[in-house]
Image 1 (cartoon, each protein chain N blue to C red):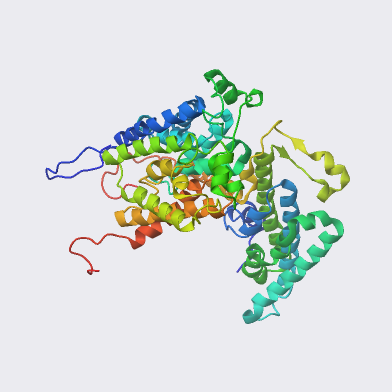
Image 2 (image 1 turned 60 degrees about the vertical axis):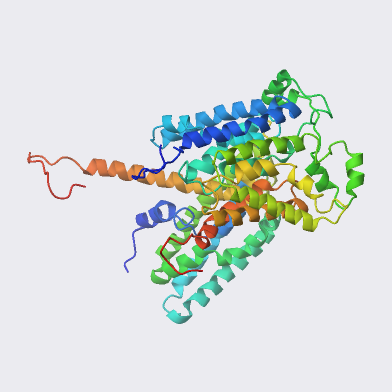
Length: 339
Length: 237
């Protein structure tokens, strides 16, 4: 499925859906590896199981819609959706959480609107928000990272996956949970009394975010997306956190470094908001789109009810993407007024 | 305007022109109170009663009220009917009245009722107008209860909880646990669930309609006997 059909001998890289999707999948590998190191094999199991469910659903829906299923199953697009969703899930969730999430992503997020390329919302985030609203208990049960507790074995993760009521694991509030629950305390007190805080942000989470940053930068180097949305988002988040931080208390969700390297910040900046379908189209539009997400992430983290905010911020801005596009249409060369 | 037959009226109210699925009127109560069967049934009965009374009254005064003031007059009638319904529910189903809360008085602003009063009752005689109110209320109510049942089942894994609010204490045992050990699926009970389930119901209705149309078209398009010529030019549809 070539995207370019230009007659003149322009040199161009053959960017196809398959190639882009495969690159995105490969780029998640460092982050997934670090997650597996800190939380054990649960994340991997989720991703594999979620991928199988996603492929089965995609094939089924394509049959229902009387289309050829083969090309859509082979272009990795549905695997990218399910993988991004499963990365966002806590490790050691029961199987039906994964199934409901992937089904919501693929059916409600994508196919209801017309399938690949027609979805107004990011499908992975649709699935994540459905789960977060519906199953708050299971969705906030993150396991304790390596260094604070023993990492479960592969057998444990199978038990947790298939027979959740027979599985005992150690869960722990994430750094963002702690900041949400302990507003108005001194950061220095919080970081010294709670083991979850590490050198930069949270134990484990800082390295997960840095690993996703590496994968994201590789995607940028491969020109899978432009720098505008991620840079705008991270800059806006940095600025908001800098302005909101009063120098020592946890009221605004901690210092800049905690905001940047906690939860889904980096993963979202490079893997979620760069979705070419549901984000703004022009470069100027992407700057606005990304910056607004950065500000929203800060606002929801500091003043909202949920510890992390990326999924909500992305869905809200997906609503606004057509509006942004309307006001940021690039001037066609030789047409229109000079501004 | 000639009065349509009762058959047409019934077909319109229940299917072809269903207030909830086709006209998409009265969405606010449809989405807000259909979290369980009992809530939906309570509101459905209240709406049905108001629709019948308002259509009957509007049809009675249709020759007397001038066109310029007809809408305020209709709204007054509807508001009176709603107030009466509200008082009745306070007397006989007080707990349900409290659960339905603001959505009971809001029946006044339900577009289905004003719409039927203006579009049908003010132009037709008493008996067809009353029948139209009944059948439209029934069409609206069936969708309301169906939506409530789907959302309650998806949300809690059980059906017919709290039926004693409507049918007295003997109905307290009607709760039917369909799926044991069900993790409550909050989304179905929250407002987004109402939008999503309504969307799927409309989609299912459209699928049924197109299949029926296709079947009817296949039946009527029998090959014409006699002529063997094949048309090769002109419009081929």
